Length: 113
Length: 116
Image (cartoon, rainbow over all chains, first blue to last red; front, top):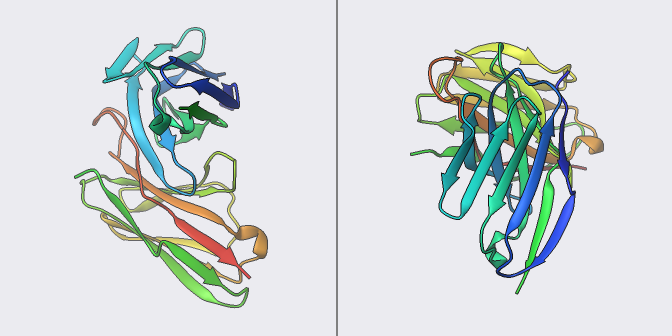
């Protein structure tokens, strides 16, 4: 059974500092890994999708890496801003079946002005 | 357009009521999902429809009844719910099959359900 873990559960940084969010998974037979942002009481916004054959994806200030063999992904957010305050969730999609998305517990981020 | 639309945004229902949650997407996606999310917890998968057929039911109680009337619509029928069923219900969609695309999941804004 796939288990996805995100550490730390919460993170507080001053504005301008780079953010490093970690995601680990137990079963390396994944199809892809997706990072989401969730604001309180809202839905999930897709940030980055990494296919199992890729090592990283970039979008603006966001960069996500994937090391399938060690079961890890890292989301980097450069030059953090107060508007980056949210919960960040990673989710892995199982390889063979493809339609099961398993989430980590999330990291709550607070960027202080 | 990468939008998944859920209605209503908020719903308050009594334990004897029958209500339905609706979800719609026009991205041509053939997989649609229902997730339940309690406060400060990650989303938990409830159901998956693939090509309008129920493919995954995560042992959800029968008081939740999903329906996929066509490739764009997904409903969740609610009956005789309990207060502990109060949560944010999220709908998502993606392409239908491994190998047909990136299978990026797009989520709606959710329905905040309160059972009284």
